[in-house]
Amino acid sequence: MAVLAARVIVSGQLDQFIKSHQHNARQRNKLVNRYLRDYTCHGDETGIFRWLELPGTISGSAFETLAMEKGVRVYGAERFTVGNNLPSRAVRMSVCAPETLTELEQALLILKNLLDQL
Image 1: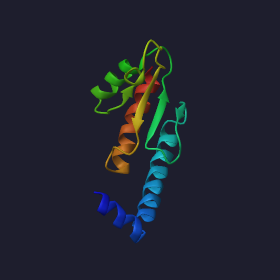
Image 2: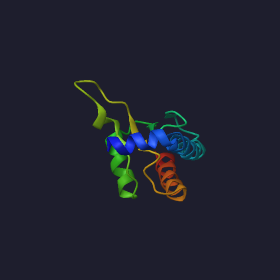
Image 3: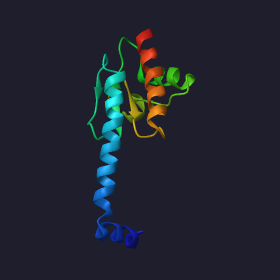
Image 4: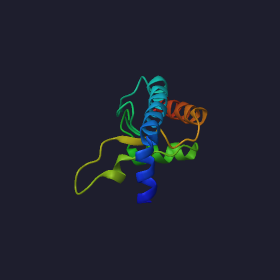
């Protein structure tokens, strides 16, 4: 793996890979911003994860269950809490996990509809 990584770096392909990844992440995050514009989503435009703050009193784990029932995987903030801290009412979304932009859009529409019902 080290030899392969060295070859990619020396060949200049690493820069192209990084630029391609950043472009893809920007496209995906623009979709998140469009579909969930009425909600607070934290994260960078080139990030692969976004944190969605949940409205009302629903917990991250409860929203995780609702989303999964509709076929969308998100992770409640409770999964990331350490110690005795109270978790935020939020879920983590992986914007780069769906294979296509269309698949991401479908998931975002499902999440938006769930959020609008809360």
